[in-house]
Image (tube, rainbow, N blue to C red):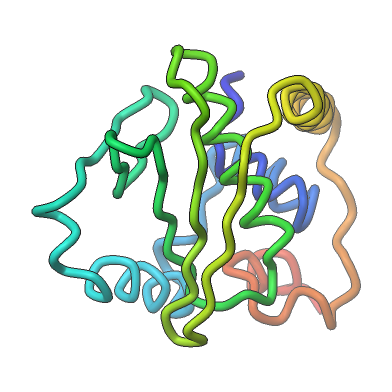
Length: 167
C-alpha cells in the first residue's frame, strides 16, 4: 500500500480514520467541513495560480510550490489539528527531498486566523521521523480496523456518522 500524505495526517488524528481511508471507505466528499476547507484553499489566494506551480509527486499533489525558494505553501482552515498538518507537510518535504530538491521548506497558512507557520526539513532527524510514520501507518493498515476514539473527539470528523451510526 502506498502511504500518502493524507494517510500520514490521519495517523496523527485517528487510526480508525486512517484504516477506513486506506481501505477505500471515503467520507470526505460528503463532509461540509471538508468542503469548506477546500473552498478556503481554492479561493483565498487566487493570484498564486499565476505565480507558483502545481507539483504532482505521484502520490501527492502540491497546489502551490515556489521553485525559486523550494517552498511549499499549504493552506488550512483551522490550526486545531496543527500537529497533523505539520506531519502532512513534513511528508511533502520528505518526498521533495527524495527526488533531489535541495533544502525544501514549507509554510502552513491559516488565512482565517491570519497565522503562518514555517516547517523546515532537517535531513536525518526528519527522514527517520517520517519513515517511522510510514511504518506505523503500514502496520495499522495491515491490521484489523482500530476502535473508535471517544465521541467527543469525533464530532467534526467526516467519518462520524459511519463510526457512530449504531449509537
